[in-house]
Image (cartoon, rainbow, N blue to C red; front, side, top):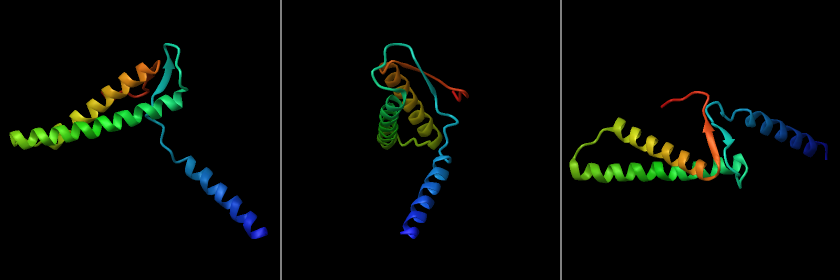
Length: 107
């Protein structure tokens, strides 16, 4: 019985330590500009999944275009995909009633 309790306490300690490893330094602060339906955490996760899908779709479209033209540039491919994902995220989060504010603007 005592071994099980020590194991559970150890597991909780490890989970708490790993939760501190999540990097949220560049995550946007969501400011409500309309009457949002979803809380900020839910809206962020929904819009991140949309942005990830747009990133994948942009890479697929670039590869198809590269097959036709023969022009491949990995930097251009990444720039196009990350820009498309950012635009998708901003438009999705605006549709949720929020405005993203970034502490450090990369673009």
